[in-house]
Length: 336
Image 1 (cartoon, rainbow, N blue to C red):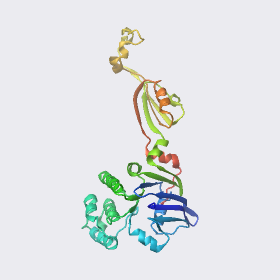
Image 2 (cartoon, rainbow, N blue to C red; image 1 turned 180 degrees about the vertical axis):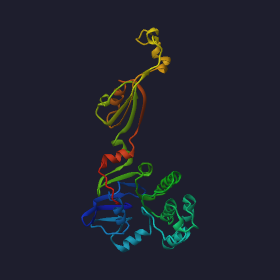
Image 3 (cartoon, one colour; image 1 turned 30 degrees about the horizontal axis):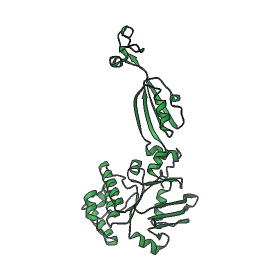
Image 4 (cartoon, helix red, strand yellow; image 1 turned 120 degrees about the vertical axis):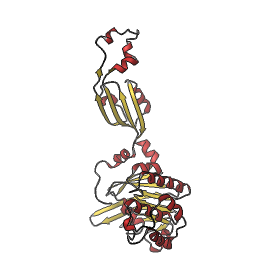
């Protein structure tokens, strides 16, 4: 039985359809990344899963429980941790008092362990907390009752890079223990680091659901090539090259007059000036080209071999670019 089952989930707000027939599952022990820009409908899905609103059409289940049935939802929530995009606590109480309240409702067997990792200032009133400290307190309350499933909306917002890394390591370890996670995030490097699969939401519709590795493989490699020549994008005009851009820097010649002409020839058309000393003295045009490549790697190697290659870097396409391939430039600025 999956940890989360969403089937044809639709949510209308009058003339606005925030979710439109969304269907996906999150398996037990899986970290599922839910991607999309502001306005795509991610938070609408999460709020429906948590029972804060009812779907217009479709269904959803948490740990086998129907979220539209109050008794079943209550049973599920005992085993679910939740962190909203903007955690809100009573600002007149201390962090310790806020956690005490949550502990009275759902338990806190892992509270001290989590406090050691995320370190919110417990004896300070929450009204004096920074955004990062509120987020740290929210993470503690989401995990402290040792849930089977955690739903997280932008979990590292406001955290410094060290705490972001600590959070990622923690989620990795919890997955090994069997925890299931639905994680909505704009931090694409985070999604790439800890998620097994991703769903990409566009204007309320799920565009794709794929394993991260397969998604990156299908969208190709990012290639940066520096060649000793003045070339344009046509130099890499072959199947599988996308979004090629080239920039050429003019060269210079710092050798003394007649130096190249007087240099001895090695019999192969090259002079000593073409060797190490000449390379230091003379620079010709240099072109830097960057593109995404989804074709046959052997064809790319053959094409690169036609040029004098000065530098080459090949890496997985950044998840930012992968995402843009599915969303394009039409993102909305409204809240989701």
